[in-house]
Image 1 (cartoon, one colour):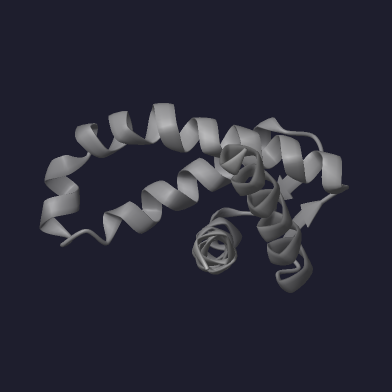
Image 2: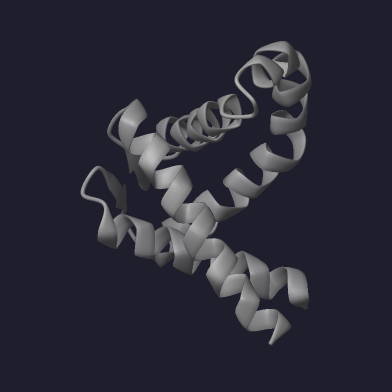
Length: 112
């Protein structure tokens, strides 16, 4: 049950990000649900492999390259899905940061 609530809160976080940032669009709540699911799957399956492959550059940049990886995963999800669009790399960087913050704040609602 908690997993379902986290999924819905992540979809709401995507809608908030799309409302705040003009370079990111989400067509509907259904599109946000699908995008949240795809982002969750990408972060679970693909991102650890990318982190392992880019470990030397991540160490050299003192972890700042992880922001680039987050943005690339966010941008990739926006390019694959129809109802979720990211209009460039810098919007992906900003969107990934805002999405992480909003998602983290919303997930605190579950622990309170």
